[in-house]
Amino acid sequence: MRVTGITLLSLVPILIGLYRKEKLLRQGRLRASLLHLLETVAFEIDAFTRTQDQIFLQFRDRELEKTGFLPQLRQEIEKAPCGAFRRSLTVLFQESFLSEREQNELLEFGEYFGLQSKEAQLRDCKKILSLLHSEEERVGAKRKADASIAQTTGLCIGVGLFILLI
Image 1 (cartoon, one colour):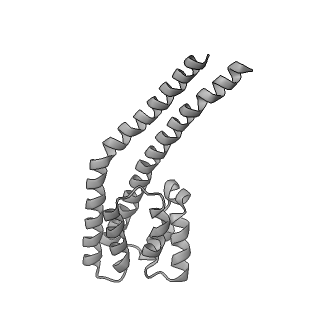
Image 2: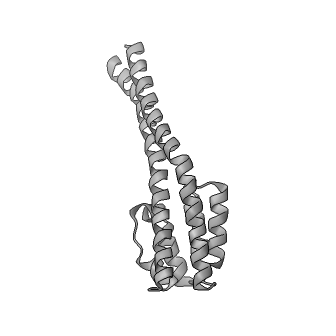
Image 3: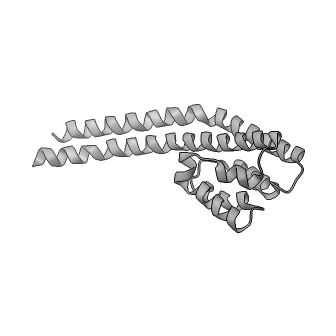
């Protein structure tokens, strides 16, 4: 009974470390998904093949679906297509993987998306993509290192606790 209790107690830091690692890696996947969405938007604007609402209604991404962003965006498009992207961003911001600057730039982009000329929309889309890519370069490697550290720390504390208590 004692060994079972010690084992369960030792699993807590291990699981916390694994949870933290997964959370950090998920932030990277969300950023990659957002980049993919905006790259698709830029391509569609440039090619002028689909309207704004068609782009968002047909876009599929598992990570953005899980956050509730894409379902919210589709609902907002059904209500009123103009400004739907901006109104849906609050759902995405709850995941807290974007800096305040990135959030503000996305809000500004969403404010005028669909209301400007093709050239202005493409310029704004490339601007936000450039910002997101540069931020990813800045924080991407740190996020991966932090995820590895979280897993290793949790494992070490868990094993150390087990050894100490047994």
